[in-house]
Length: 305
Image (cartoon, rainbow, N blue to C red; front, side, top):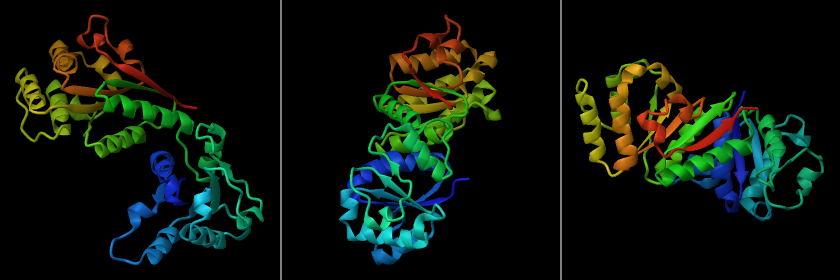
């Protein structure tokens, strides 16, 4: 089971740590302790740094020339090494992100380190995740690639279908995408078709509107669709993630009017963008003549391993 992990790094590697390493560790269930989230203004830095490091069971040292040239980083490294002399308990994991010799304090014990000079090296990522008791249900490069394509597509305001197979962890991926979009001032609501409230059409529309921030009551059918149009018309752009879209095939009572209304917002007004999660490809879930069957939807596959 993933535990608490402290990441020690130079801020020259900060973008990689925050955009690649941190999402992978958190998606796998780890609690990551890192300076930018834990420090408080107005308090001395070193005691806070020590407290953050001491709260973790594992110290990840992201080594680089800049790291080894930093007094702060070396201090964190030496404190980590003191907690596990000789690398006997696996509490300290050296990670090479930029080419540099292992410092003498580490090299003397000849630990098995992780080399992520090549960020696409699935074997080295797996070595790291295994040491941290983290699993994604797929390879880290595949998970990160799916996230990158999904994020890029949604930021372009294009709809996309996330097709998941096997045990790949897609829930934290969608949660991470929500944070990614929020960082770009783009909000994404989430609707889960496994919720009982989404079984009736009016309930689904209510969940969609609530996910978009509307607190108004939803009228009965067919006025529920008019309310959906009204809310979307007040916003320049709306983004929704719909989980378990496969269930649509088992809910014919949603009716053609709902999907015609969605198609209008997706294709005509361009006010709505969807992230559709499913096990089967979107096109395979709908009849050929279905209103949504012709929408422009990119497919991103995430396969378990």
